[in-house]
Image (cartoon, rainbow, N blue to C red):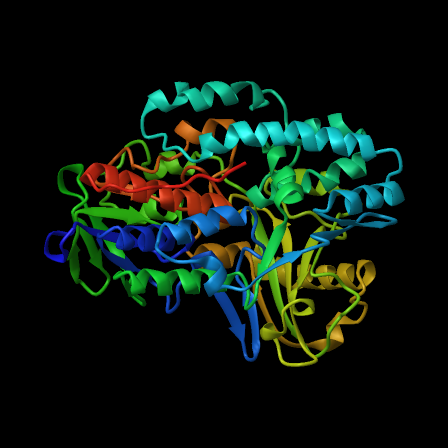
Length: 507
């Protein structure tokens, strides 16, 4: 369409979903303005820089790379020519009480590790892989649809997927049904933490997540996962989008419940034909609309929703490299379920914690000076519905985390090598990063908050308003957030009669 007649879309937030939407819409001829409150793009996918060290704020590896490749293609770009991807194998190391296991996306290597650590479980792995392949095949088309109409719940895709939803089973039950061993079942259920949920509470349908890892592998991008958002912003700008940094939106202008633009903190008004919200869902619902406008998502109703857990983060610049520590490692607490139950109930557990460590400098020399490393540590924590006083808890938790790392990983002397350090607590997620309740994985993915029952991509309360990101369909995680951006771009094109071709992942 000619630039003079192009419909104008204002996108609030330059996170992965907003950037996906921006680069596709700009390529299809829309006038796009992205408004980002921070000084850089990426949101929770942005970089953190401490002197010469670079860290990813949130996501640290990429699954379902094909979806990223597709959204770049639909933006007139090629991800492989703009980013350097490295497939990681082993994907990660799991530390149990008395052993560790390296998880591989190579079936032969994986079976060899199973023989070493859990002899006799090889056939169970084959059953897991075959069954979850079928579940994923039927579920993927459901995740790529919009649910702004109730009729989507009885679509052909949903009818075919229904037998695979495992509506009455939890993730741990599904995996224990394959493996029967508590520790081995954990190796295929800890992925529920990608959604901020307990494996004993997470719906069984998410058994497809470990399958996705084993079937398609996981990837690192040179420079960190934050490079994806940086490159997306470059593509969006090249396609004609304007990305304004340090531009905080005060409110969405929605007279008569129709989005007509936004007002910035500066007082500037930006008129638009549609508004896309890429801010954290709970934060957006409770701060960006005039009081009393929202009904279904009023502050009181938003507060009653179920939310994910939070995380305690450490970003450590070290003056050494641990070449014997893998790129990714997860250590399960000795009393893993008790700790997870405590977090779910809103309490930070005591004792040696579960933790995740990314030692990306082993793979990527761009993140730290030669001979140094940038180490990322994540510890599951309760969201801010609990009563934890993080000003008092954080210093003590830091010591417990470092003790656990020195005891359970090859990083035996990590304390004396720390030269730069940053921590993010659940309280920081809420106050500094505008994450509602500090719930870093957004709304919980319980059955009552999925597909049609999750906030919809075409926002049901305000016309010409759309949602992207982890708080809407399809949910949390980079691939599904990219998909939310593509879904919204397609919805906007349909609403304006703009023709497009949108690919689907070939399974």
